[in-house]
Length: 65
Image 1 (tube, rainbow, N blue to C red):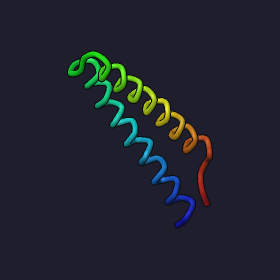
Image 2: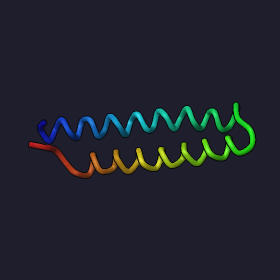
Image 3: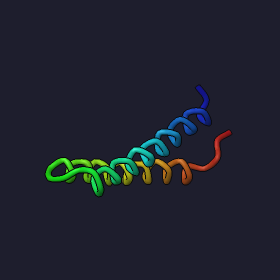
């Protein structure tokens, strides 16, 4: 696999993590209560931070040859 294709899959994973975090934030704020609310909120914000770091890596690593 080429370096460009690997970066594409990494950025796609970052976008997927962002989509999952959006769903988890919705669940934790409006649908769940108690400990489940806290667990999904922590998971959601963790995925949001991870996706931000992935996208930052892809953008700052520059173009591939």
